[in-house]
Image (cartoon, rainbow, N blue to C red; front, side):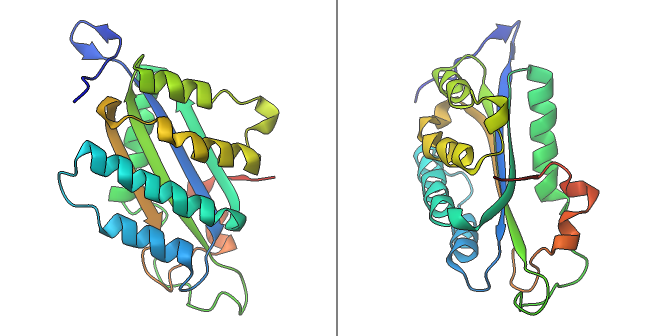
Length: 201
């Protein structure tokens, strides 16, 4: 296994962060939701580095397949160690505290009234200075005016094959909603907890 390579201060390894979240139209029994939920449910405890790579490769394949459904999103790359760790912890809390979850179902028929949405999130804490981190930094060099373009999200997703999980210190991935009937509404997405999502052009 390739050792972690990073810039060290004493015994402390410095980290960077890459995170991406997409908000897509939710289709009951649709492929995007069902495939992402199935992939998340298939991850065993103690998965190998190769297993991680295969999981995220399958996730990216399904996201690209469902790309026409994307409406909002966000992504970040931070090379400041303190900011990277704090942001990664925040993304992790989005899963463990059920942040963004509804208190009651929104219904199973999005065609009567408001449409429904899903969000899929993945975040990676990387060893700063590793070849993997350097490749991600190059991938994330995007002009400011193109940050929230769909083409940028596609390019980044297509480039995630540069991730080497021997240099990934931590990762997290989760899906909202888990179950049919709990899709997010337009009103849900105006809640302050979703303030970071940007409309994609």
